[in-house]
Length: 181
Ligand SMILES: CC(C)(COP(=O)(O)OP(=O)(O)OC[C@H]1O[C@@H](n2cnc3c(N)ncnc32)[C@H](O)[C@@H]1OP(=O)(O)O)[C@@H](O)C(=O)NCCC(=O)NCCS
Figure 1 (cartoon, helix red, strand yellow):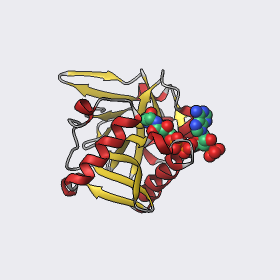
Figure 2 (figure 1 turned 120 degrees about the vertical axis):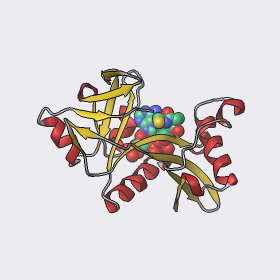
Figure 3 (figure 1 turned 45 degrees about the vertical axis):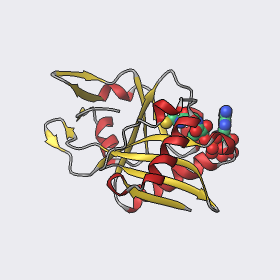
């Protein structure tokens, strides 16, 4: 079963669980993961087996996405923080969580993208989850940091096959987004 909660509605217990699974999956110390920023507008996914939460992930709203000079009308969300409790990894739960996120996106007509460091070796996982992975497409995403606009060429892009925003990139258009995460 998956529970989806918006950031502003998270209970203290959900915040604790999210940070704990995110931190333990990455070997972070409690000191670091208890301070993780959980934004109120984001969507948090909790995958349960029976009474235990075994995996978490989130969709981060990316507001004000521009395609060339035009404001893009379809909501764009970034998938991030996919984490499976180390006790339960490699038993299909990471894939199950991402499938739930995908179903949610289809139902709610959201564009989902993800960025990740090209050097990390997670392509295998995301491909098994039904994503396309493109390590050149980062160049088409222009990101504003302070006054500077630069392309996101160090990161690979994850996306679903028929995503309308991605179809525009294949027509050589550039996407402007306010930040990554
Ligand atoms: C990456 C992560 C989310 C994967 O979750 P998981 O539950 O262990 O993965 P799954 O069991 O769902 O694996 C999905 C598929 O990948 C395969 N797979 C699992 N581990 C693998 C490995 N080390 N190498 C290659 N394939 C692997 C599985 O066999 C499965 O394939 P199948 O459907 O053909 O059986 C999990 O390991 C994790 O939390 N890692 C730490 C945090 C992280 O790096 N998150 C991602 C970045 S945001």
